[in-house]
Image (cartoon, rainbow, N blue to C red):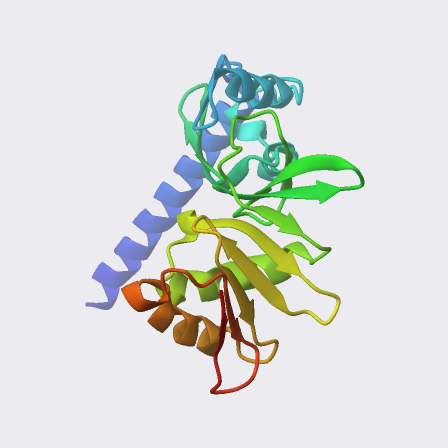
Length: 223
């Protein structure tokens, strides 16, 4: 038994040295093919090409010299990007699949109108998105995104909102397409929306113009 084990160990050592020698020989003498295809999808032809060219300018010699962090840095420069996956395809290709951010609202930043993306970034308004609600006031983008989650849970369709008003007290109001304004509690906007929803689509309240739910467990209606 000991002799068999000894022979096996010697064979393993021999194979290890042989494979190691072959690998060193290959690495020292083989020339790997240069990267000749950087394929980007998800953002439209123009933006896909921009990212592809930026990565080409990194001048990776071959697929083994790719610095993934440098690629990520280039992708993150584009505010339209929500998520992405990077694939190295041997022998000489890079594939990048991008998920485009969703446009959620319009926002005035220093006198210029931007789109707010679901990725938390502001995007130049080069798109036809005038149907998106407009944010008045000066909230942090994270504050808006958190409030958007509350709206989505409330049952009030987001596409019925035309304006969102943010106040210095960090309270929100909503203006709907039917010209009704919802005044919400600062401390519990989710509960305020729940109370407001009970009155929104009832015929007996079709002429109201404001639902004031700022006070806990109290709703004031104005026509």
